Image 1: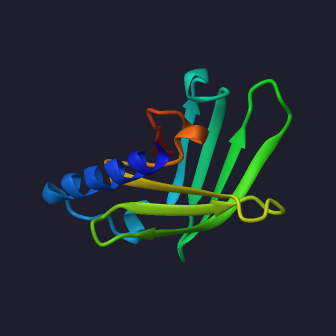
Image 2 (image 1 turned 30 degrees about the horizontal axis):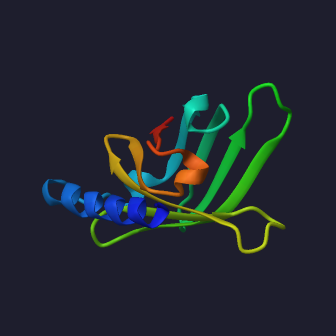
Amino acid sequence: MRLLMTVLGLCMCAAAACGERAPSASDLVGTYTADLAPESGPARRITLRLEAGNGAEMATEFPGDARTVRETGTWAIASDGAVRIVLARAGMGPVTNDVTFRYSSGTLSAVAFDTLRWGPHGFSLRRQ
């Protein structure tokens, strides 16, 4: 199922790129946030920072819980304009968070992602 979602997401990326200019690195550098409702897993606030030089950091906060999960990694723009982010949590071994987004008007919308982690409908992050 996850493979099917990934393939479907990549096809959507390719189709969406037809009428839009691919984003540049300067379009993308910045901080993005989202508040995810419980239907996509536990309620949580996501903050994603894309840095110049292609570094990335995601912080996940859980309401009513003092913990914040931090993951670091890299991001890149694919030839079709999709934005791929690969993150890992320190000390977690080979477990990675690999998400492909489509960027439009200050919003990163997930189009290929782990449905077990993010739920079946994906998520969007808005630039702050």
